Amino acid sequence: MSEPTSPTVRHVLILTCLCAIAYLPGLINHGLTNWQEAQRALVFQQMHEQGAWLVPTVHGDPYLAKPPMIYWWQRAFSMLLGNRTDILPLRLTVAIAGWLGVIATYAAGRVLLRSEEDNTRKSATASLLGASMLATGLLYVRSSRIGELDILLTWPTSLSILLCFVLMTRKHTPKQLWICSLLLFATTACAAMTKGPPAVVAIVCAFIGGHVLNCAVHHARFRTPIFLAGGVLASIAAVISFWIRGSLQNLDANAIIGLVYVIASIGIITFLVANACTHLKALAQITKQPLPLIAILLGALTAVGWIAIVARSIGWDNVRSAMEYETGDNLRLFVLDAPMHNIEAMAFGVGLGSIVMIGALFVGTLQTLRSGWGFWKQLDQGTLWIVAWVLGSLFVFSIIGKGVPRYLTPVWPGVALLAGVAAMHTKLPNRATSSVILLACAILAIGQGWWYGYGREARFANRSPRDLIHAFKASANDNTALFALDHWSPALDFYWGKSVVPVMENGPDIHVAGVHPISLNSLHDFVAEHTAIFVIARREARAEYDTTYPAGRLAALGFVVQEIAQLPAYTIDNGRSATVVLKVTR
Image 1: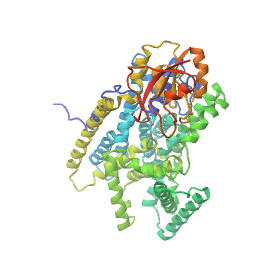
Image 2 (image 1 turned 30 degrees about the vertical axis):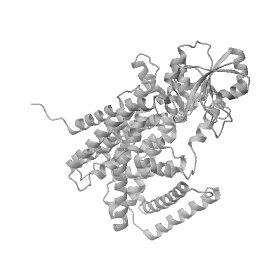
Image 3 (image 1 turned 120 degrees about the vertical axis):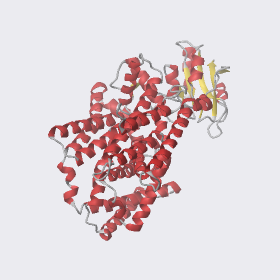
Image 4 (image 1 turned 90 degrees about the horizontal axis):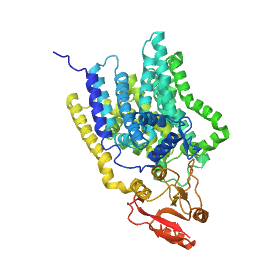
């Protein structure tokens, strides 16, 4: 008689089935519509053509917005699939990364949530429920279906936090210590080589923030009035700094909420750090085992090392010019709208997990107001690390970011694990709770798998230029010149196979490596060179920008304009504007 399957194997199979249902159906049915996904596909296509895998490029110009980890994943899948350069390697990359993130979250939960007095079954069930809610979370599924690189951060973040916790709370032989530290370096390096040094923010928040929070809750000699006054003073200092910076002028509702959030967070953090400092012996434990900090630092510096290697190849001036705009655009200090945008994303990003976590935070707040720190003292060290992972990362990303939901992707595993813990503390029997949550997750997986695999293509097929470009290429030749008037997307270049030159007269500024917009008047030179050119333009004029419809603007410059008929529909501006392909001659 065969032995029963272990809970771990059974749980991993359940999670794998949920991921397969949600992430794999109709993997390439829908064309490229998302800007970030199209850019990753385009850069991979360009790198594949050149056979260069160290320096990402777009039309020969270095594209250093992000390190090349996602392109290396695409290269690996491309080789496995017979050197395919379509969107399948990218879609497989994010789908597999999403699955790995779910499994890594389950593993992290099994370690962090297993306290000394807890039984294995309870922590295993909480981890299963948390990972299931993560696997079917709305923004998590979106990241696992659309080729954005942030999903590649989830598995190294979860594993890095797991390893930090093991290194800080378990006894090791010297050999085990070095093995865990090397693994921590490797996982942190994977995160850094995906999105640069800022990718380790969530790891640091869980590690250092979790240690400080644990000291404040379980070891502090509370002097609440004194330290509460210190928190208030820190909040006042934050208000003064915002006022000096000029951020307090013309505040809207979102900015006011963001300001209140930042000020309150600064006060709470000051209060917690001050309390933790009352037990310096416990706080100093983090310095007695320096290997985790060293491993995280060295892992983060791998991205810096990659930049140095690239600079030796193309020169520091080219590196600086390639990175200058992206760094300034992504890292923005004290954008007061950012906290509100991040809080909104937290409210639905992990789907059912977000709802459960919000309920848990609400109950925790009420318990704190009613019984003080007694509620928090019930939480073990692993749970406090997860709290620091979520709330600490939310605070940091609200301070240094611009409030883009995908930046919170490495925080979603922490949200899901908190939801798993909360689910195990409901008044319902654990088996009933588990059954309801797993059933809901299965329904969410089926629904989202259908939507991203088939429903989105049925509803929004015309938002991708795939069909238009493929139909147009059938009658084009190698010398055909294609332009885009007052708009541009990397998807155009990807499907066209070469540069679609943006003509920017009344369109947005484009700061992308390898993309060089021209003025409307410059078209005369191109028409003279090619005899005829083709322009993808909006069919109708935009009231806020255009004095007449695009074809009329071209005709007013002395061109002969002819619309190419019977091409598939392609819409831009989130489906609001239909486009046409115009043949332009003299």
